[in-house]
Length: 346
Ligand SMILES: [Zn+2]
Ligand SMILES: [Zn+2]
Image (cartoon, rainbow, N blue to C red):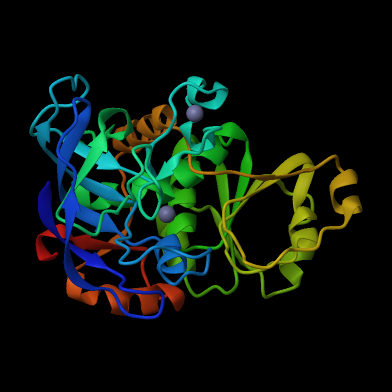
């Protein structure tokens, strides 16, 4: 066992605090990663506060992890000491079910293992990336291309793949009109990625407050959804709408913005159920869909795509002692556009 520094939530109601945790001894297929950076995802906050179900505490969150390989198990073939690597939202799966066989480990029929707060296949509870080191089985460790700096690559491991996968699946590219709803951590990555794929990109945000940012990130157009005129002007416009907002929205109004046979894909997760009128889908033969991260192969493809196009996330680098403050700022949408923690401060 390796005892390492970490930041953990002692309970659902207390702030995160410095602590130490144990990392397992390296098995034959394990990789020991010296964490350099850990991103703060909105899900970390929901999870540590018990808003997505009861948790075991102390809980170390963090599923956007970038670092360097410090040691490898005897049978590891995919990674070597010194490699620049990343870990995203999952660290294990059964490896043999129909979905794993297709490379969709996130849909493992036996349950993929979340990077923190989950029961691993050996029965232990996983602890996440707000820590100086992590041990992960080699198949769930990604290569971070040299063209990407580690700090800006970190948020790609969740926010990047969460937006890349649906944009790729639903055909964002030249000649396609893509709308991104919400310009936060997920939304800003969606704009960069859809633009790099060659689509015509529109941001639909509540106000025009971040318009300059949106255009700088690669959007061609920017509209405020608080203005009812937006819904009249853009009726029937988009081939794909990617909804990154985790607050309730009027789905019927947004479906009205889709062109015939267009698709609206939800990656934001409001706690409340949303009402949908069947006629919003029937007229124009539209699709309402969801998307969950991406498999390991597709996550590597996304990292390589971002490196090839020369972009990572827009980040604010913080020391660990600012985590609790950063959580409040994420909840207030006061971050441009992802907090990344310097792991040297854990
Ligand atoms: Zn996340
Ligand atoms: Zn499986």
